[in-house]
Length: 235
Image (cartoon, rainbow, N blue to C red):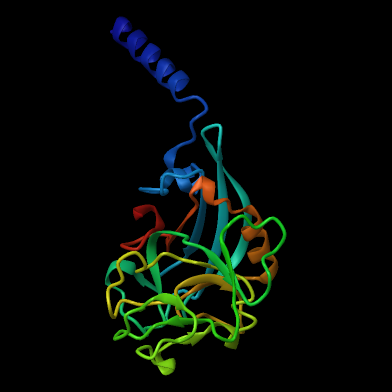
């Protein structure tokens, strides 16, 4: 009995040593708990309490020397109808799609802030985001608006000088667009309230994110809730 007790004590001690320096998964940095981070060394997380939430927290992270550390954080806003699973989202539902997405490029009505490394498109009166399901350029930036893309089904970028002062395109439904799933999902500057489906942050936070984000480090954005089917850790 004494030998068994001694062996158990040794194994427990070894387990403690082996696990030293590794926080329990429940308290590990959020990127460590995600199913995927996109394979890069930068990550943005946008998390809400529940799918009915219209506010939450956005944090941008760096992976250095094998450890994820926060580089900044800001209050975030989501769709006026909350969040929903990105793979089954429907267009015009005013919901923010959950999931893990790349960030194709940046754009804005204003010039890019100092330090921006992302490809940055400066908007003019001819700049539109085509959201017409019948158009060839569905879910794409277009200049000028093509004849097959109805203005009533699209967004003129300069019509939103506050929200689109500076922004990052979120790669939701972007590579191979599914008609009717949704178009024009961005990380942009706050407007007067909840968004139509995008993620938004204060203007100073947007500037800091653009100065921080490095396309060479393959940043992605993970959007989700604290728990449940749309938990951010599922993505």
